[in-house]
Image (cartoon, rainbow, N blue to C red; front, side, top):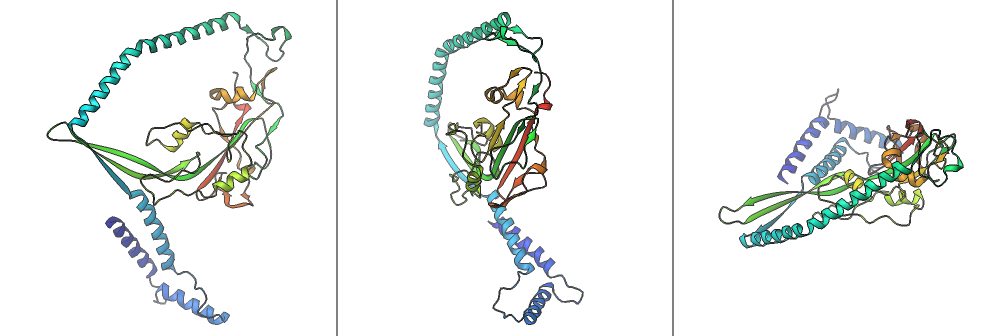
Length: 362
């Protein structure tokens, strides 16, 4: 708190120096502003009981309070100290020894299972080599190979089909041609806990003292609003207009999202979203796949495009900014920024497209 007071005092002195600079007439700027207000009040005929315009000092103090509060959140820490004496360390060593012996006993079974899976994969590869029929011209499939395993090479195409997102206020202004996949990803700015541990060994004996320091980290996450922070109950996360955004996005395509997996601590939010596999069919996210996708005369289903992400969802590009709506009437806080994204103070929605023209032969 001493550091925060010093910083706030320094910022206040700087604001005073700016506000106290003399004008051309030698009067202070604050007095000059007050005299203007009085003259305006007299000319207009208003009384002094009306709200006065905010002075430069008031604006400076509000800005300083905001910056100090932001700095306070970043500097705020909570320490937890745990003590493990010699007997505690002995019990931990005994437990690790038992776990190691169990792993030695079950490791042959795990190795046998792993080798069995390898043999199955080799059999599948051998089956494909011997049974697959090579199609030289994928543009003209024949009925004689119906039901057979075929191998062909071609370029992904959607012909002249157009594609857009689910109808609603957040949809793009006009459909896109030659689009294989379009997605909208919404992120919210949230607070996260991060921890750092410091262990100190005792000078006598095998005891240890572990100090865990928790701090606040702020970042964007597509996983939606988070709950209260365990060690910082006085700094709750804000939901912003997330709920209104979900309502404007319309109902989700899937009934429920998959259960979130347990992740290691201090993982960046974007990486955590990759591990947890954000469901883009859940509002306010959205994803559309072309129904006309094909390679030659062979069609590509939505399941194939969604499953083979390394092939069909690897080279994303941003949707042209002119197709993103400038604003949402029901959500006035959401505006298009200079990068072509819908953004507010705590929310942003980014539109991406996967063009079929970016694919070579697959």
